[in-house]
Image (cartoon, rainbow over all chains, first blue to last red; front, top):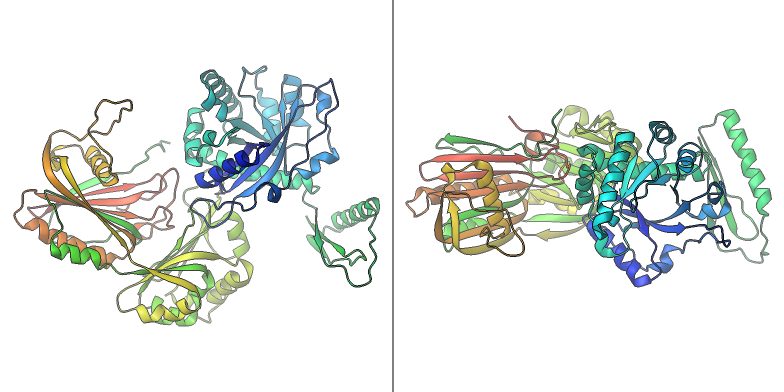
Length: 301
Length: 339
């Protein structure tokens, strides 16, 4: 079993509101949450994809999860509301600073493309309106094979009774098509009061037609699978994982940097060598640069 | 397959002069209800206040439980019992050390694969096994210090998976000295079980033998949690009612003891309650509920315990004036009912 996660906590610009939401989530027992930055591109003016604020600027001390002895883990996620195929740009560099990537399609064609083609982790199913399209088995099975999960959010059901009908109807039709696999449940809570504890969410999932075990997985193991899928996507199929550490510059050093294109070529070269020789694990030691930054290159297949 | 039975509740009515106590080893709470009693009699009071104390060790590295000296002085004599604290059985790694020398580690998939010791997948799996149980008998000759399996487990816990949890430790009376060396290496604090006494007035009590056991158990739980069963009309309608037929008792005493409690203390309490109920009194019954830890990897009789939506594993003993008793046993969905 995995820890309980809530992968859709909308980012609130007001810092105290956000802090209260994170504290409530920790108190309820969620060990990991993901702050959701929603990006809605419109044809009218060019908009920029938001960059995530580092979590230590938002909250000083992360609260402890109730019943465990660890602080809550906060991740960053981007949701792109797609009304046109050009809205999602694959491999855009702005996507790299987010831990999770999600897409909310609004038409059948976009849904099909999101399931089969796009390099994303989560597909959001709209809960606040009647579904504009029907779910077909083929794209859903394609998405499940690729490791993409479908997300159902429940806080709309808490806010309004009409939304409650739409939420239940849409969720039930999703469960019929996907048979309860690869579904995650999350709040899209605008306030701390709209969050519910993991076992309550499990009970809610029973209403949507999931079985006991599937419902519990929707809040724990499937979320973990989505996170691992995201990590794999970010690290080129889990082959290259790079981390940068700061070290004090030695005396009399100059402030020089490697060009990023030079490093990128070096990484690609190492990656190809590793695949060719079928190495299971290669750990390169640090390269001491004059600027005092050193890069570890860990290659594992 | 019907897996919707949330509770596997059974009750058995027996008549015997000796009640054999073989209950859950890891007990977190004992609640006693004495109807028609306004204050605890002195013998009962002294038993309740003399439960053994236990220790809470912060961040105990689990390989310390395999320390040779600790094994020889404490574990082999069956004197210690320990459980990991603030770890959830369905989220984290849990550790339990039983008096019979069994060390049980309930690990998630990543930790189990890192540990690299033999283990079995949990019985309560959904589609794929995500939880694994490593159960080791420390008194077995293959786990003697110096043997291959022992060294393998020790190196796994020391270097591969450095498992560290907060740990609750208790020892049988007289075994205090054996755990002192272990405690001296760690950050520990001693605690006494907490005793709460409440006198309830004007309590409607159902007649235990004449009503359905499920509703009686529910009523008992409501009394223990302080939930009113009056069902008066207000903006919130509660469905908890006292089962019919019921009689009104002027007083009742509800006592609960919480902490890490050992079987021999519970046994003494049981004997004291039996002596109490045998004397002629207004009320003819007494009930004692023993609850196990919701997050313990093992429940009674060394069976595996899990947590689906609730981790309850408790039993309620109803003792009557005429030497008969009723046993109600309740388990959650991820539990094995003892025979």
